[in-house]
Image 1 (cartoon, helix red, strand yellow):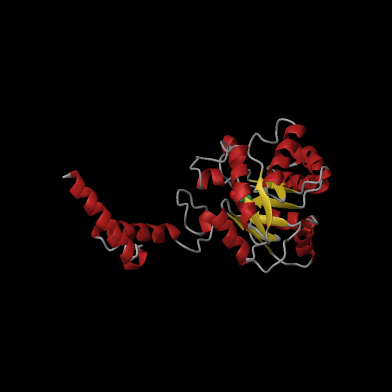
Image 2 (tube, helix red, strand yellow):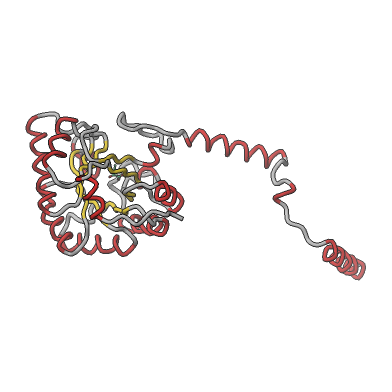
Length: 289
Ligand code: KIV
């Protein structure tokens, strides 16, 4: 249905040089990925945020590879245009480069075009190994939900000179390792600007201001489908929870009152077949009397 061509990593890189802002959202299932793709989104991120907004985990830490593979497969089947990037879940890339490679290959075989890993210079060796094996990698620095929650929770990153320098050097080492883009999460506007200007690859912000090359948000946040947490950086475009609640109440009322199903929802036998049926049933009843 999508008339647009499939985007490649090369197309994504070109958008930075042509000053075109990148549009990125998460999606985890067939119908939502279909809608995102059809709307012309540049990148669909099969984020491990799925663990929270779809599976109901309290953080992204419990998310497993088998769960990610299921989401990636569904998104892959729906997507004709957007570049798909899949999060490598916590524990799937830290223990060894070979394990990271095996898991990244599984995500690519399931339908993703690229993978995303959280971390800076400490994972640059892994990023390089993946890229050398032909797997496009998106980096993720600043707030790293897989581990930040273990240290100091969800806080703004890059507020001090030392923290800012660490983010800037992490982004540099990811670029040098071959990452094709980098997510900056909850980073101060000043640091975002420095990182964006000093790297050739697109910097995609989430809660990191406007001085970057594109924006990413969690789909369920912008649609009002996940209301447990509402970060200040989220813009809600719809309140689907409210609309779904109303639709469900209407359905319950319709079933209870007999308004549903109505004439157009009901299937009938032909009159001929129905009268034959009644005749045979009548004969059987009489034989049993
Ligand atoms: O998992 C996710 O959705 C993400 C975005 C918040 C960038 O990593």
